[in-house]
Length: 290
Image (cartoon, rainbow, N blue to C red; front, side, top):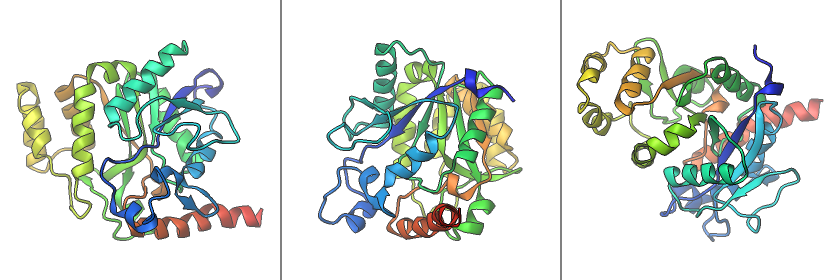
């Protein structure tokens, strides 16, 4: 294993809000007291605090950069950087703003790790595992954490996650991903398009609708054999990596993290109660016993 004392990654923590309020916020915050989901009360803390506390334990983290909140919205008992960007900016805009902020601070980063703010079940052991994998396989422009469906279903049955079904695994996105500064600059429109499509995905779906992606990829003939394998149900995760890499002109890698809490964020009202029970069991009960 590489020595994490010599390798550290800036972590962008996405704390914005959608231009149109989601059902979760309408149910948990009907009076509109909270600017962002990150600020919702959760087991005696703000929702985002649970994630930040685990991230800051990791020796791989260079610093935490908050995107979508400013110092008047939330302060912390530990150092964080507030990146000036609108709360409702899309993913591509936030990443570009974060990259510009790093450059203004004289920080050159080949890879940046991006975290959500609404996965309170995430733990430092799995965070470190993700960092170790991307560090030991340098060169990826986009490394997406993936959680096996069966692992998540065992803890969160009928969680309604959108699953990518390959012949060797069935997975859905986890709550960390790494992106290179090159990919942010070169693929900013692709990032925006993917972010927009992800927000539109129906959580009731059994598998990802690949129509828009297939139309984009079909413009590149060298990807056609991979498309055929996918359509015939013969694609592996490695095929998916090659397929997306060829389509977008960047190297894409999937990082499988077999831990339910690593992939369970808070999108629906019922997620709030499910995650409360999970965090009480995996974190609070252990603290009390200690």
